[in-house]
Image (tube, rainbow, N blue to C red):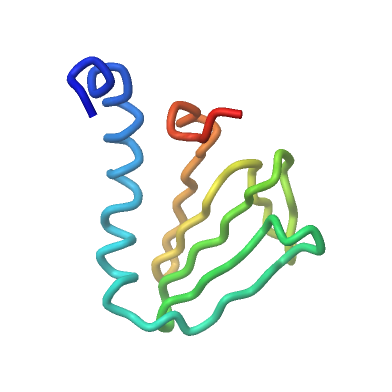
Length: 99
């Protein structure tokens, strides 16, 4: 990445790393204990690591409710124990692939 691209994308990259670095540090040291497809279109998926680390990713373009829980479009919801953090990929649109 050159300096111009870094300056243009820096905020999105930093926001992304703030959320995903801590999660990834924990996930890589644990075995994936469960992977589940949550919707018929396969666009909402869940991965669990150990007993208390989980991510639910909604790759669809619309909000989805699963088991009474709402997952925004283009988001990932990270769980660590009772903590819940939403990563809004749509807000970090610069990191999404260009169509």
